[in-house]
Structures are given as C-alpha cells and as structure tokens.
Amino acid sequence: MTTMESLDEIDHAILELLQTDGRLTGAEVGRRVGLSQPAASARIQRLEKNGIITGYRAVVAPAAVGLNIHAVVRLRTTHAQLSRALTLAARTPEVVSTLRVTGDDCLLFDVHCSHAERLEQVVDSLARYGPVTTSLVLRGYPPKSLPTAPSATP
Image 1 (cartoon, one colour):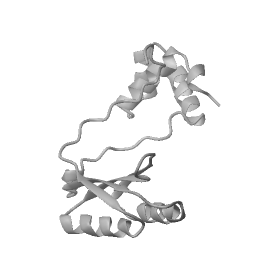
Image 2: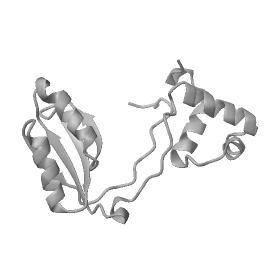
Image 3: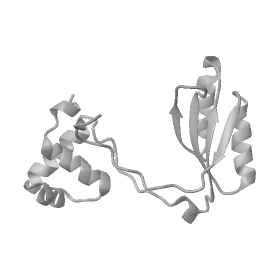
C-alpha cells in the first residue's frame, strides 16, 4: 500500500492537478508535470490501484436541479440507534453526505431539499433516532483541494 510518505513530488503534483480538474488527459497531466503520457498514465493508475485516488465525479449545482434548500442536520443518538440512523440516511436521497463526529453530536448530515416541507420530513425522520439540530446554509464556498504533501508548519 502506498502512503503519503512514499509519494514523490510528481505524485503530489498529479494529485493536485486531478483534484482541480479530474478530466485532464494523461497526456495533459504528463505535459504539466514533465512526464510522457504513458508515464503519467501509469502513475495515475498506480494512485488509483493503491486507493489514493478513489474516484471521479461531476459536481452538480444543487439549485440548478431544483434543490434550493441546503441544511446541515446534526443528530445526537445512542450507540444502539447509530446503525439504524446511518441506514436511514443512506436511503434518503436528500442526504448527500454523512459524517460521524465527536462531541455532543454523533452524526452530521449534509442535506439538499427542493422545498421546506421536504426538509421537515427529512429532519423528522432523523429525529426518530435522537435530538436533531438543523442549520440552514446561507452560502457555500468552493471546496479546497486536499493537501497532498506534508505541511512544513503545523
């Protein structure tokens, strides 16, 4: 298994490029990092095989597809209810990501709904497993790429 320590500068550069634009061709990646297309493609395949690159996807603007309400729902539950809450979240299309967290809450859900009534239904269904706190998102900011090289300062 490849670890962050076993990645060289070119691997880190490839990861940064693909996080910004996952549609770059092997030839374009190679050109930008100073490798031939076959060498760049081989490195990308190695990064995929070793589980460092886990996939590629299109990023969709929620409002453009009618999902005008964005909320973060936090759930405080018991260990006995945790798997049921996770199963419900996985079956609920409006829950686009789930994080298990430490602190007062156990789970954090990123929820996109078309209207307030549907958000209410999603929140009520999650509330069967414990107290929920819902926050409406006023604005989102573009995600940053993950750092691919160890930082020099903490």
